[in-house]
Image 1 (cartoon, each protein chain N blue to C red):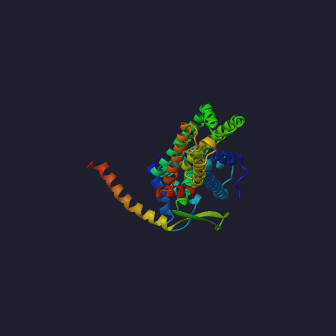
Image 2 (cartoon, chains in turn yellow, green; image 1 turned 45 degrees about the vertical axis):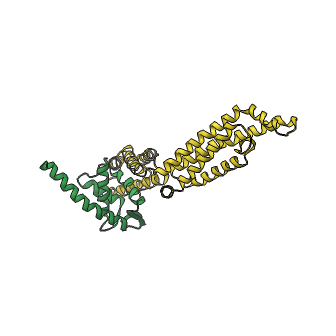
Image 3 (cartoon, each protein chain N blue to C red; image 1 turned 90 degrees about the vertical axis):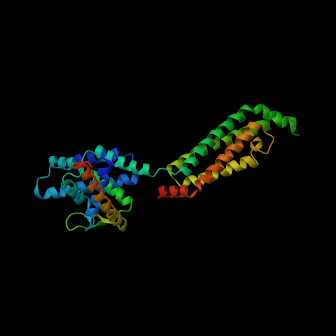
Length: 233
Length: 105
């Protein structure tokens, strides 16, 4: 079988592979395999009644068409089917809430930094030894900022996975919601909505929790499940 | 290739597969021969890949009478049903377009 050992064929397949870069790896492999087999079959057929040379190979590749044309057609068809499988409203709402949650968490982190002095005054009113107030303020402030920034990252990651249509998004959503619930109920220090920390930080923390709750509710709608599972396949 | 043309060619492939199994090169050749239905033979491979993903065709590696083992394509039950539905819609569509093009009514 005379499949390879032709620089012309190798070059053609390399160009096709590069042009198909926008497709998932398994689909790309499928197409390359088909075209490789096609070239082998065409050469086999020619080999029986003609002298095989570079001109013959150019003829075969010419019939196949320019790699860019084949790839453009493949990608165009794929876009058509992806557009047809646009995420349902429930999924789009969940993604929207996650972006809102990321924004709220970021605002909470900023509010935390801005209210550091207020936090110190709050802690000063508690029956805490005077020499410990500075350390307690720094520890609480740092923890709160870290948790809020982790929230920003988690919200953005979950939104991304949801939009991509991966069922992993739901696992991430639960991790995020768990973290957020802990933050609201027992908090690290002032983060807790029930503790006497600065009001702005407390309100924003609760808003972030609500965004996470809303996203989870939307992700568990039947239409979301169908979308995420279908895409996962 | 326009969406309409591409869609029609997909059903032409399904129609060819109705009687027997074909391998890629044969299909590409048949479609290119059929009055230039396909100008770039290579476009058939993304098309076959889509049909397989959508469950309309199936494929299996098989020894051939001459030459190397090849991937043979066959029609699935879903493919048969899709082809049948298309054949009915196509006849109506074609007649309507023909009538408008020739008589303008």
